[in-house]
Length: 104
Image 1 (cartoon, one colour):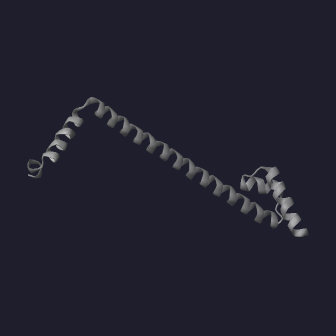
Image 2 (cartoon, one colour):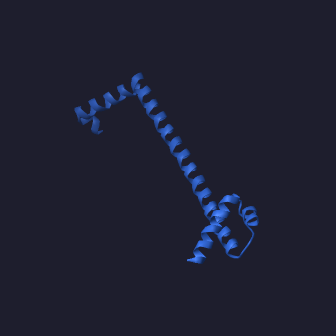
Image 3 (cartoon, helix red, strand yellow):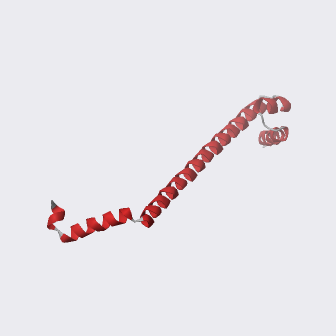
């Protein structure tokens, strides 16, 4: 075996065995593992939050697109708000923008 022929390697192996039994080394390794798990949990939470925000943003953009089409088709403001789930004041603002575009 190579360790038998190399005193340096033999000493390194012996030191590693000592370190593996050292309570402080075990504690440090456990804390390191806990830190990695905590980091992963934080990452997973942040990723899930970003996905939820992206979905919400997409739904809002779709609601605005539908509202715009309905308003251009001369649908009533309250009907557009009800169908899209947008607030009536948002629909009114969008209608004002569309009317300004038509006049321009």
